[in-house]
Length: 152
Image: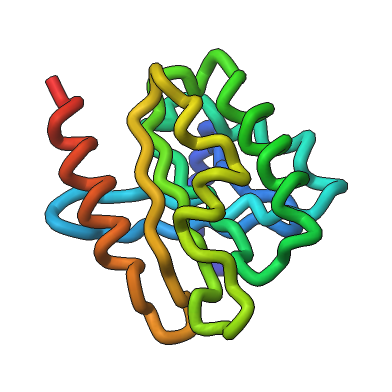
């Protein structure tokens, strides 16, 4: 039998996202973002709150072409923003799928999500098309610039 080193039995804690969640680290302008893609499926929404601690910024992605679900998106956004752990988090809304002919413009989404009523929160809406990448960097630029302003 070969000589094996003794096992180190220190407990190891991993943060593993549940099914339906994805985690990635993205670096942009010397800022490392840990991105938790928590998805929008009804059954996993109650799990979102477990990932709110230490959140400095929220990127909320809205399907600009889905007029039937924009009221639902507003309710979920309001519920999230009412969480105590997220009271200081910046809000970036990506108005996605702007390449589609019937997509709502960012101004319409701003209205339907009630963003102008968010007086005590720093927010920004960016028109995007995830498939082409249009608008994504502009949104990250806003987020990174505002995170740097908040840094001690």
